[in-house]
Length: 503
Image (cartoon, rainbow, N blue to C red; front, side, top):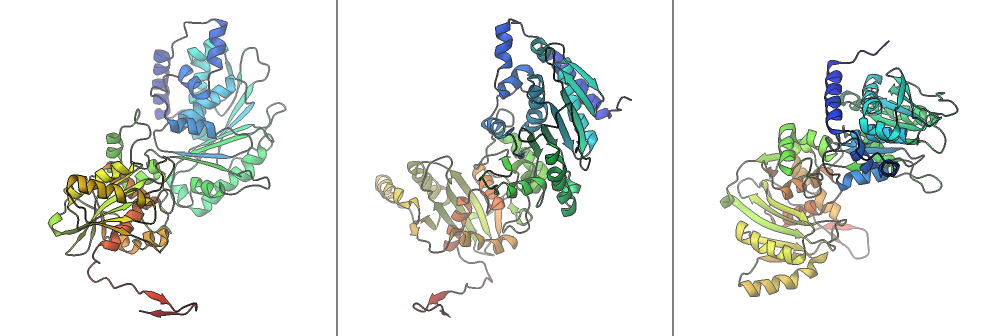
């Protein structure tokens, strides 16, 4: 009996067929050499060549990282990528189609939170196998037999067919075979929803299903395993995978691979600008709110144990600078490498009335020392700070002579202080948490890229870069204390003894 599709699925299927026949027209060059060259294309180029109706924008570096990090035999791989970055169309559609027509896999299992969703995904791939003119040009008249939930694909000239089968969570694939083959590829997409993610018990059941039912059912040594998802919160599937990725077997090989590709980079800029411009992402962020942005685009799970929570963020529309004590702080990273921590520069104003901290501006990037010095002079003129403080533990030696030279050249003197730290960075940053919780740290509602990146670093902490929060902690040391705040207790060592006394 044929499956009864939902109206939404039928409408989506019609749109895809229209695009397919409009944009994936048969190839003009049908020589044997041209066919062989197209079939041998690398995965991403293959997808763009044969399925142009899905891949209109140029690929970004993140797509290459996802492709390079998946399909390693015997390694469960979990991919988290921002909404709209194409993870599903790449890994649950184009990749299985390519591996099927190339004869790379014998038996695919598709998993989703319920079987119906898995079958929906399979049906979109079946459309390509049965009706894509370009695939049929180079691979022949492909034959697909079976139900929507379980079908086989026969490629002309190849004896071995490929089986596709859909499963929902809890359905056991144990004992499944296709001829002599057990399942040798698993693709999981939409394995969670918001309701499931709120239940620790159900999240454990999902993990157990993957590890106790799916993995043991696979063909030994050759199986590949890819799960696509998003951050639903603490304890969600991707958070569990991230924790497991730190574990290794006796040979030192990771037990799990976790790939995280958020929509924006450390500076808050789009990582796929051809698809989503910065303005479009800003609008989405404003519409869906910070919590949903973190989970779906920044891929940050709300963790109640983290010292900075999205629920504590306070936004402001306007602040009178005449009532602020302003400090500019610079955390000078040692390296300008894109893989190193960015150099954090922040402008923070403390209200002389209630002590609230207003984030006025921030930059988190790998600017050169000369660029940073020029920025300091520009910010000095713009914000007219009472103090400019630069951390002297790190790369300040790069900046001190440059600032002196520039002051002499401009005839303008900066109120610079070089601050040496004895406390660990973590202690300095986490000391800001109580004021955050009290709503004393406030961010502009309309945020420049650097401020967005700073806020993301706070909410991601202790994961990821932390030079922005550290620059804020540096500024905090120079700001007047909030009204009503108690002075911290200081201690002084008594020689070599462990005893401490108050001072």
